[in-house]
Length: 227
Image (tube, rainbow, N blue to C red):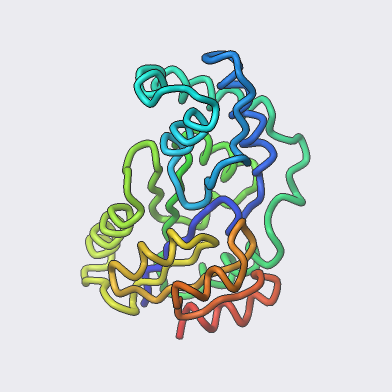
């Protein structure tokens, strides 16, 4: 039995354009600038961290952003839902659904962590039909560090299974260097996919256990996860 923790954005799904439109709407409303999420290093970071980065890029002080964060988050949730495509069937990355389905037939516990807010993640999971695969979900607007999300997932999984999960019994699957770093903090098996903004070469620099170009050949990814 393994605890398998998946990142969401650009690991299982691709809604970067929706995120970018929501960020533009937020920064226009609060600061009268076009703040593009895609102009900062957003991968593996929380929504609040990305607000601060976009603010810095546009000459907005950290204090001004922090003062507006609660209202910005609320508006971002609304803007994201409004920009969400009516047909999102092509937004689940190749092999992701098949991999989750196959893993759900094993004794493993599947968890999700993401830098998104709870509302944004719920929109994505519900409208793509991926919500049913995960026992636990952790959000960047509620837990700041990815490593802390892994710690919480381990605790909840231990309570559910009646046994501890440590070392390679914990698997972290993600598209960013932040995912690899967080997994290594826990001695977990790290499986990286180059479906985001980090190339295979960039991911390999962090020496994960496995790197894949994508999940298209999901059976190979599953074998790497289960060891």
